[in-house]
Length: 143
Image (cartoon, rainbow, N blue to C red; front, side, top):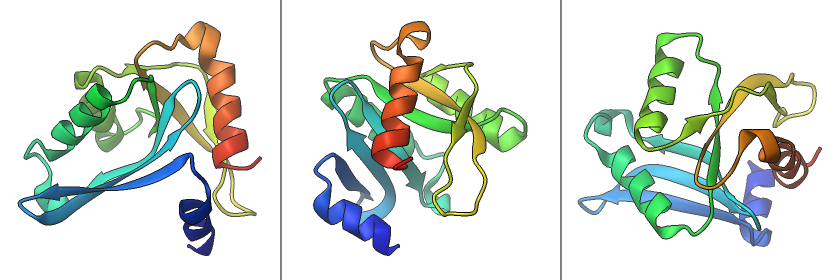
């Protein structure tokens, strides 16, 4: 937690956003603004507020107001929840990249997690995958 606090205070690429509905906080979205794309690191809504369109509205605002492509990580489509999450992002215009991608661990001693990247905007899996992966590994995960 202290590490995240240091990043939020001192790294100009990092932004933390609170999602508000009827003056109540109902979610969060943490993002990184890089030269070629925006990376959404964490995006969550309060479980009691799900299926009310709040996440959809938040993503729509982000997509409409950012002048760069957006990248995020998703779990492999191996269970109902991960499949539903991927389908949610697809409905918002994201494309699922099929390249094997492993999320580096946040803590030393933990394993890499097999994931996939999803993008919206002008990025190509064929030409941009390595650049995106390397940016995340170097700038977000420090590896």
